[in-house]
Image 1 (cartoon, protein in one colour):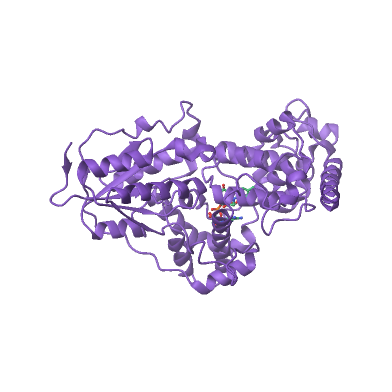
Image 2 (cartoon, protein in one colour; image 1 turned 45 degrees about the vertical axis):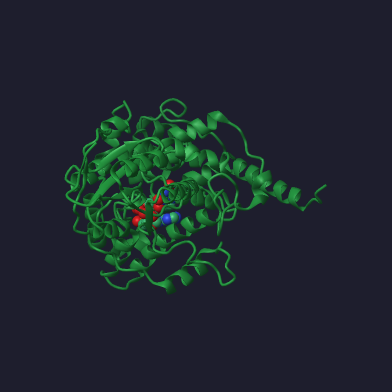
Length: 480
Ligand code: FAD
């Protein structure tokens, strides 16, 4: 084994969800201490039930490729148990310091503690920093030391802390480890099926792509964010979520870049959405069972249905409700779904189909490029009504009215449900109300080339409200 470094043994920067060079505080500190061996370890077993979904793996492949290119081909890849790999590398090369940026997923926190303990026991110093959040979860507690469960006071309090300005990329002296190690292809992150290629068509993973997207959004799109963000066919949202998830750019960079555009209501609104991400991370940190357990235990007795056919129809965008189907097909074909559509499709699953929110969260986890344990879990709990500051359970999105309001010309729906492309706008969101001759003219045969609704909106709404009421009554009963 031979570490081509120059003089003193290098230090390790362990990349995780910080796949960038700029505003990367742990990397910057590592760079100040000498030559740096940039390392990424694919440790899939450690994540357990939170292992990456298919879409995330595809994005990660692209992002690692870009990071490696910006390191001049110097990214050292390893696979397997992270603790074993780090210990081996440090011991073999006399490495005395390992740097990483903190992560907040429960499994990572647990693993980080174990690794830090093992490295320290071997005389290796661990230095960690915050690259992922505007505010650490322990900075945003209430006066009594407990976490906020309501967003607005959380945000008000957090804003008092301020947001650190981003730092430029450090000058790096790279160390190279000549030991044979897996290549990116060996990590086998890409599926055998070529669907990934098409899905990636509208994305540019990696730090440079993230910067380009941010710049485009800040200059051209943010100025109508407050109104435009609700309309899925308007290009008024940032689409920065996968870049943020993989740490290809930092929330501090985004916050300060949009701030340069002025102090408008649009910019304030956008920063508030970034703070929802912080709120989700604080919830996950303080309530580590957020991905699996109702934050409000009163929901544990809600009578979820188990209906595999309904779930499959929802997943495939075959519910017979065009807006829901468009949303689910957007997810499948692009690896993304617009925020309002996530709420509509989520509400439909949980309330109209009365299926457990965890089934929806699992599907999103597999299909979203931005699949994020904090945001996905907190948002699904929000939709289901069992989370923090959640939408009340009785608020049930009506996909027909939502379509008329937020996709008035039907552009979004027609794009993803092309079998309805020729249906006049007045029938687009409820094709079963169209007269026979209108359907004929549009080439639609309901139940044949487009499904009839799988549930009745009114009846399913009443069923959901009844399940909720029964749950309330059960809770009120004295416990034996
Ligand atoms: P923009 O509107 O441009 O917002 C900018 C950034 O702010 C986003 O990238 C995101 O980081 C943050 N943000 C915006 N809205 C929210 C929100 N409601 N909650 C938390 N952070 C927010 N977001 C994910 O990043 N990963 C997920 O797995 C995820 N799952 C979701 C599941 C459901 C059921 C719902 C209703 C929402 C989910 N969200 C998730 C939140 C939100 O829909 C996305 O962050 C947003 O649509 C991403 O698009 P954007 O970057 O264009 O957002």
